[in-house]
Image 1 (tube, rainbow, N blue to C red):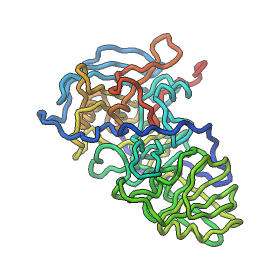
Image 2 (image 1 turned 30 degrees about the vertical axis):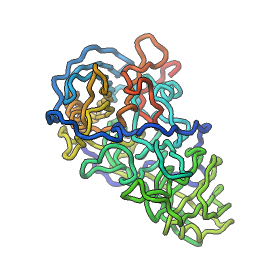
Image 3 (image 1 turned 135 degrees about the horizontal axis):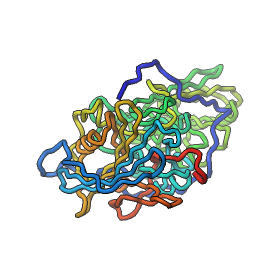
Image 4 (image 1 turned 45 degrees about the horizontal axis):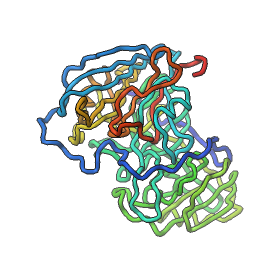
Length: 432
């Protein structure tokens, strides 16, 4: 993929007095599952070591929409025969677009088909890894994703610390801040997005290091707004930058800002829906100390942006597995398992979405290295791994249908509710 080397670009900026709208809160996430594509006891199987898939044979072809081609395929890996689905989106065709599939709020989950129907997508796959399990008494899992989200050119959330993410081990040099998406140049990109922001008043100037995240870095302050939902914000102050299972901080603070004015300061981290036009600032350790300098009635300005080498219209978290047509070193050997991944061509004009079924007699699944090999053979130059296992879901409209259907075989036997996804949309079509 041709690299973008321009300077830092502002993806979006919001202030406390003009926060984006949100829909109603979704149901609380369930407690089962790992949400990671790797079962808790997953380990490298005693199978012949391989990093390449076998010959890829396409078994059917459909035109899902202008510029969108759906193919089923058959190949082989360490687990034997593998069946899967591949979508090729031609981003040069202005009758099609790619965007974020998401629930009504960040701290909620929906199935891929539910999100696709609600947003009128013609196809889609599940997206990033997410917070689905919790062992601390009184702390609930949020259902929120690990990495950044950009929707319609605006940042929706930031990335948790690497040590707090879910999913397989990260390859060296990658981060929970890595994303795949489509830029304002209508090209696909794999890049990194970092959150930068501030809280400014006459009493204090505080760095903002979190946005609608289920985990904050030790000693920092994060922002939650109406897009977060009703789920408790307590999870954000638990664990450390290196250990997801670490204890919750006992030194916390929460400040409520309504239309640019502080309306409350508390030592407790709260829960419940956040009204439109309101920002809730959560701090831990040194971040909590900084927030306690604020007083009710203080006027503050809250601003933030996601910065990186690409100005994205849409982006979702996923860790890189293929760069310049070469699989990265250090890819997890665990599996094989069901996998979801996405890639872009060298010129950024094609986006590829792939789901490989697994854990069945019909399809054995793939390792992450084999997924990288598969996307390389499909035409991708850069690619990321997305959530797999029971989360792996591929939906699309069959010819003549008005809604999407699940096209793969989810390993749970049915669709799993997930944090987000990648959607493909027909631009300007009736009912789209």
